[in-house]
Image (tube, rainbow, N blue to C red):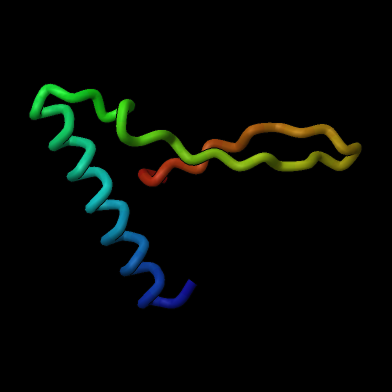
Length: 57
């Protein structure tokens, strides 16, 4: 990943984290407004698994 894309990803992750904290601080559950990001991946023999792809990773 080039440096600009890494910086953009970092800034987006920080903004989402800040928004989630603001929800919690104001008495609203962040899970009511945000959900974790997951991806389905295919195994070698065609099986499927869920891969967590959280913004904090």
